[in-house]
Length: 506
Image 1 (cartoon, rainbow, N blue to C red):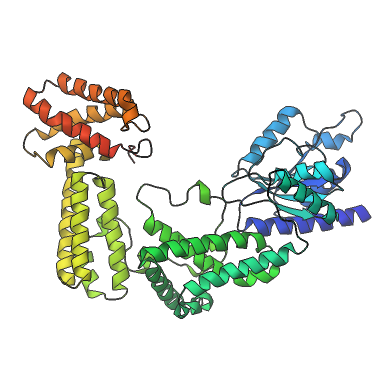
Image 2: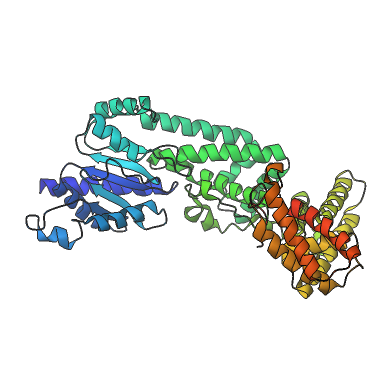
């Protein structure tokens, strides 16, 4: 009965700690027990807790000597079964979260997303140093592993970590780790609080008034994106705060800051959305480990997307109708921020439909920038600015119509625009479109990384010859060939300069 009580208490504390840690950073855990019997008892205790994470025991055994239920419950595993469990543990999205071991996987097993080690077994020296290495693999935003000592091996742990560090690993064991982590968290929190003007600080306690909350949130967002250096500073401060918060979020005293952290995460997500080029994910693999708190706090206030907050229901150029622009001029609330978001919609449309490196795309972008600069300098009125925005919208819509009529992809349209920008009437539209479809296909088939560099002359020659072959097959007259060929090659070098990072539709 004493064992049962101890196992239940350990399981309850372990599950509570693991769940609190998972609120802010994704990762998996290993538990080391002193015997196979302890592994099974702890497994049963964890499984008895409602909503406990999925857990597996990883150990070998003797079917003729061990209890039959061990085999029945899948605790005694074959190599193939262990490989399957290992593959599941390596997959951050797989629901298997925790493995319980005695000796297995303490050496030679590499599971990068494993970031927490719970120790309930006397360990020292090399074996403990090897166990530390299990949770110290580089992965995503993980800066290091967390070791939780349930057995009282603090001195051995410090010695093993010192040896691990000397051997090339990293670590800094301290008796007051929580105290130091909390102190670092509060310092990072103070840094971001000092960056945000004091007039916005009341937002942290303003959930009861959704309208005032949204107004404050919108103003704070507008302040941050007003200057490029503010955007970068905020993202760096929030990133540092999120990292330290992940170390202390399981502590009860830190729960007081949860809503404030969630607000910074909400602003971060909106800033990234504002800054991210179209057709690129706003959360890349590097950020995958950090979890948001929004589903547990701010979302209960039903906060809308920042575009919707300022009266832009869809962040797409299709929203820019005459009625929308007419209302835009009447509503003065958050005017500067709304205009910035409108700019982003237009820039994104130019990027997607024309490409920022094409002559036509660059022309659109430069014209829009010049017009906005004149407006901010008060050289033209808001009405004149709106008229210019309408002209840009109409030109983009005409280009979109042309693309659809000719059946061109954005890349093919980019070549089409590069040609017709200089000689609109030289070719029949559909004939030119058909040529360029084939050109894009053969060019992309020949591309290699760094293909425009001098040392890739052979690759570049392959691209050029492929283009020549397409043009010859189309039966072009010499004058037409001499006009098209250099322009196609020149545009390919611009559009696909960073291949394979560029040069894919979608």
